[in-house]
Structure formats: C-alpha cells, structure tokens
Image (cartoon, rainbow, N blue to C red; front, side):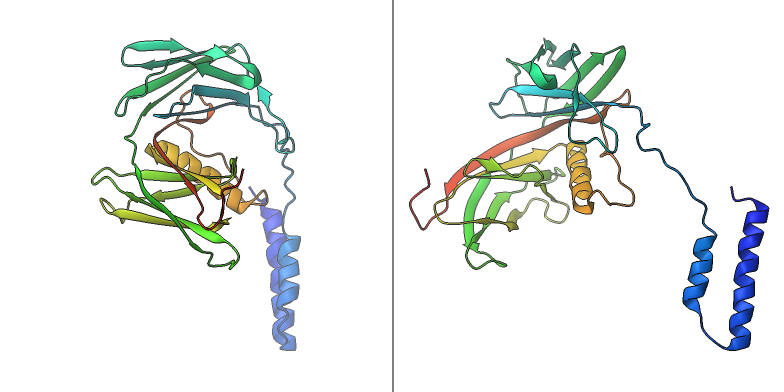
Length: 285
C-alpha cells in the first residue's frame, strides 16, 4: 500500500504545477507527465527465485506413432535454452481396464509400445516423481478426414503458392482443430494453425493458410487434428505467447489439465493426414 505521506507529497506536486499552469495560461502536459512518473515506487522483481515445476507433455492420437510422455522441469526466466529432464518417474496409462506402464528412455521421454487407440475412449495418465503425484484424463476424439488439398498463387508473394485445406466438420460436436504442415520433411515448430467450428458447425471448412509458401515440386504433408477442448486451449495459449513475444506485459503458462500442480498437457486428437506434391514440376528428391 502507498503510504499517506507519499501520496500526499505526490498530490501536492501535481496541484502546484496545475496552479502554475493556470496562472501562466500555458499547457505543460509533458511536465505533468514527468511529475506523475516521479511518484512511482521502484519494485524489484527477482525472476530467478521461482521454484521449478514439473512439466509434462503428451499427446495421444489414433496415428501409428508410439505413445510418448516427456517430463522435464521448468526453467528460470533467464535460462530458457536448456531443460532439465526428469528421471526415474513412474508413468502409467489407464484405459479400457488396461494399465500400461511406460518405459523410460533418454531425454526425459517415457514410451509405450502397445497402446490401443480407440475413439471415444477415456485415457488417464498417472505420474509419480520425487514424491509428487500428477494426473490428467482425456477422451480421444474421432478423426476427421481431409477432403481436398490444393494450391493457389500466393496473396503476398507472386513467386510462390499458398495451400488450402478442405474438410467436413462433424455436426453438433463442438470441434477444435489444428492443422500441421510439413514441407519437404520439415516442420515449423512454432506453427499453430488453430480453428474451431463455432460458426461452421456441420459445414465444409475451407482453411487457406496464407503465411506458409510452397513452390512446384515441394512434397507437402498435411496433418489434421480434431483436438479435445483442453488440448486446443493449451495450444492456443502457446500460440498467443509466441505472437506476443518475450516482451509481453503479462506472459503466462498455458492452461494445464494436470492435477497436482504440474505444467503442460496430456492432450488428445483424432488424426488424419494427406500427402501431396505441389503440381507444376518434377517432385524434389
């Protein structure tokens, strides 16, 4: 709280300058601004004393990829280049009366080799590490097939092409989508193309992606994820943080679905994909 004497001093300064302005009939707004600034108290925020938290990242889909969980520790504000992996955690996935224990690998990864992926099934991830217990539950959504992928001349660049993805939304479902693009085997890590069916329920969705560019001969893989709602919110939080940048006035962590205070997400998404070669030239090797 601001002390009474401190506030009184600020008010007296402002009043004196206002009287001076009135008598001289001169508008001195810059001076008032300086006076107001002189009333600010200095707040010292120690960004290095934040206690590290467990960060859990995992996404279950109906794809053929191995189900994996990555566990690490959050870093201080000025140490974002490296992460601390969490070792010797007990990681278990429960679903359909099955309890599957994941095997620890390098880099903080825990891997399952026989996970069944069934749309509409509820999956629960239980993690115990250093006496802490974390838990999250998701339901795997249905996959939504991609109908069409095609290319048009770039709106902002005449020497390249933009991609358009079309698919049919599931009516009365409340769907949350993410589109991921791979160009010649490469994927932009910070690319989050997120849409919902809020105003397009049950309709064909046409998704032009104007900020990605392609040329004839490119091999393009399009992945469409029909995300569980909390997963979509988590990715949206990451996307907004990236767009705001490190100089954001109020940076924060994306919303987590883990109990126990862990950061991160146990997400789920129905998966479909399409592989196309941009027409107009021989495909690149």
